[in-house]
Image (tube, rainbow, N blue to C red; front, top):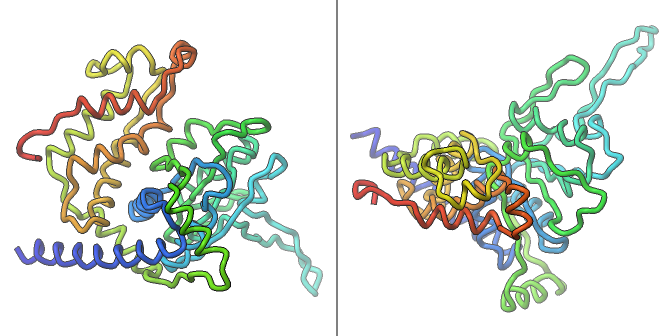
Length: 335
């Protein structure tokens, strides 16, 4: 009983702190509440996020603000076609001492930070994109046979332009799967855009301050994994992920007819973590069915692909996922 009471108290305290952090971010990121929620959820879950949106929608500003509010070091890499893996990871240089002795010294690259903005990630070649794979999965990089650990926590927020596809390289499926979720950054509505131009074109601009620090964020990520999840929610997550696989017996006809390949176990893991994070930010002690439904599309859409025939028909993955979600049921015990 005492452990349960302590857990409840810790979750409630963290929920209050997260509310304060969201309010601080909202001072600089106006009209993008869902985007902020999803990116913060990815950070709480200890993972990475892929931001899809046109230039000028505040993606870079969001990363800079989150770095300040969460109290972690930020870095930025502008991906270009001529970017090389060493430009990301770092390299070893040969140095000569005063006595003539020679030795190699490792010079860390920009990946050695805690919150990395990988801007326009699909503009770099597949070889360079793959340089991030080990860092994203293992929180370490290997250069010249030597492994170098990255700081904890480590998160990648990658941006991608949805329209400009000339001179770009599609992200490999293995790398897409490393992103906990895909965040669609849409245009703000009229009122929000009015607030944006008034807030950002005056003499003074809102500044962000730290709410968390590195130890706080690591503790929050550990607490998240102790958060209870009802059996009905676990079954709902499994039903959703498996129904999106075209070769699964539970898949509906829309999935069988249109989807070439579906999400793997990492999708279920991501949903388990992110539903907890969303509940935490809403001040709830456990995730519910609404959390699963809200996060289904962001978690699944980049882990699925349409068949050639479905693309020719103009089918959309988002609509297919929405159809699967509508067919989900939840047991009375979990409701």
